[in-house]
Amino acid sequence: MMSSQKIIILTTVGKSLLVNFSRQLEKPEVDVLKASHEELVNLIAEMGYDRASAETNSIVKILDLIKKERKVEDDQFVLYFLHSETKEGSFCSSILEEYFKSKGYLVVDREIKGLKYDSKEFESIGLKSLIEEVIGIIRVSKRDGDDVVINATAGFKVESAYLTLIGTLFQCEIFYIHELFRELIRIPKLPITLNKEFFEKNKAILSDLKLGIDRMELNKKYGELPQDLVLLTEVIEEDNREIVTLNVAGRLLALLSEEF
Image 1: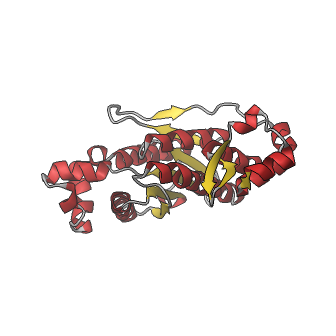
Image 2 (image 1 turned 45 degrees about the horizontal axis):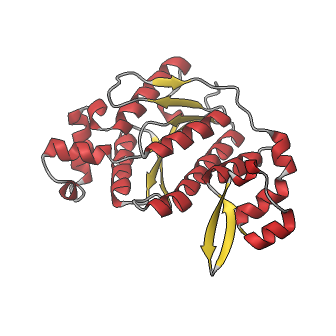
Image 3 (image 1 turned 30 degrees about the vertical axis):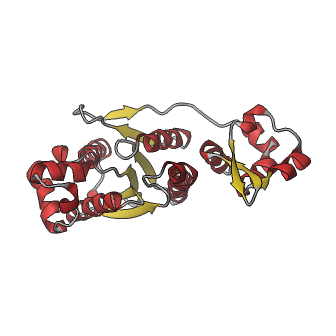
């Protein structure tokens, strides 16, 4: 591998760091949120990376494995932390950023809009924002000749599911480690591809659905949608109108179809 190539590691951030700090310090989480960041970064070292959080445990092991297998240097890694739009997510991501920067790694922190403790906003905005962010990072990285590794360990479980699916379709290396496991699980690359003919056939409809289209206009323009398209849509009530748009799965597939 050329020394100029970067290895991008995408990690979703949960709140295990906050929970474990709370236990270690025997303080409620609300008090930990107010603690000195320097103190907490040092606490990770005291606790040990494998006990501090799901993120530190998985990332350090991924870094060590890749360095061993590929003979690469620390400055070739770029760690992306994708966190929720919550104070807990922002807090944990900022501590992780400071910790790994102190170890000499380049770190990028990204807040995912709509990923919050609100089920409707989480589904309608958060997950869509997540897949757009992840696919955007992968596209830019691949364009620049860099490699992308997905760490599907932490964060909301549904985040891990979508990251694994995206990683599989983009042929990225994917890692996962359960809190009860000591070793990384490497998810094998699968020969899965999208049906190019389906997307070419429905390109115009998908374009309208991505923007959102009034149900009456949709029916007038395209007639009754086939079941395989219906499965990719959702209906939103807006000013006494029914707007048909792509659901999370539909938006993911529409973004992937742009690769054709």
